[in-house]
Length: 571
Image (cartoon, rainbow, N blue to C red):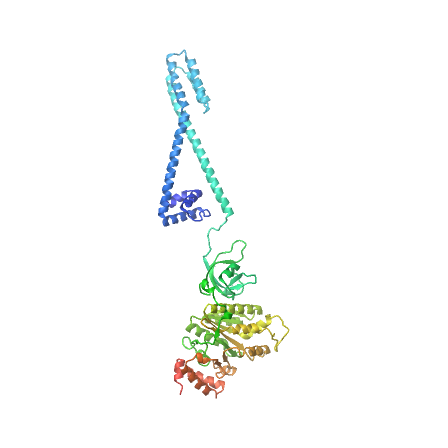
């Protein structure tokens, strides 16, 4: 098995060969330490495969060693063939010197010639000449010279063998160095050609946004942190992805994102996990919102149980709100409409957690936006009065598109709009002039889009529902506001009137009970409640709005819930 110390001692090409044999993925692009740890991880996961590779390496190394030893044994044999002749001649050299001094010169010439012929390959003529001179000068010490010659011959053999081995070793090193250099150069070329990041971040980040499709066919996922306007957090969605999944403007897409490459500005979407909280395969076959069947609201929002206030309890009796309601809160300035919206939002969030709630604030004060964000359990989308009218329109359009896409997928959505009058003003400002101007400076075609916004509220047969509770301003002193209110007056199926006289008496909620009602409330209330509400309305009809509100306010405070209040009624 591989150990970390052994692997660290190896060079990068050797590690890459090991990784290649182990089939480690992407080993070419990794650094040395990363490759070491990846080999160790693979070894921990697949010990059998690693053992097989190690055995194969051992067998291959043994065969290589045998080949080297055989080649090294063959080379000295070839080199040592002429050397015994040289050594024999040298051994024979001193013998005739002992017996026959006369034939010394002839005997010295013969070994010298033999030495030259034997040492032509190694170029050792100088040593042989020196040996000859010494033997001529010192005939008295022939025995010692012969011993010295024998030692020198042995040293020469060893030197020759060592020089041969060094040359082989150097040649082998040069070959290995060339192989390693070629491999390293190949790796450098591949790195330069196929430049990949050291760490892969694809699929690590999972992000969500609302799709906004451009005219060219591609789109961006807008972030709710920036009120669905263009921002640095936008995620690019390609045209092919939009076609593949059948995406529309307003779809809430959850998917995996990768960082932008060189030359890219945005984070592209690489995988779609969910669309509007559902599987993409389910969403692909949905029916368009315009082709869904609208019905009257049949399921009532329970506003009188958890986190209920006097305001929500009165609304729950006199103007009940159902799933799919198109309600309008008609109010004069300073009558508490924003507080009433906040109470309704908190009651719906507490009693109906399955409902997706959006609070849309158009042309409102920034401090009210902050207060709503901190005190309401729901998504708050705002465009304050210091923004341009085009931003109001863009925010409103993407919010209504998001709500429609959620309803297409079977969700229940509630939009609390404050206010529809200011939204209509923004549409009127953006609308190009058609030449037909109504009283108050309202363009004839300007109110079509806010009507389409408000008219999107409906209860879907065998599906979801979209409820819109919008506030409309009256008696502001602006002729345009009066015209807008008159245009929207009969479009809703629930109307809640707030009276300035009641709020001036510091009675909240300042609801005009006789003027507030819901169409087809018999579909939302049970028979017993309907009968008692008939009796109560007849009793309140003789009173003015202030007296009626004071009477109901006192009775509601004395009871814990609406059932107890209805039981306490006489008759």
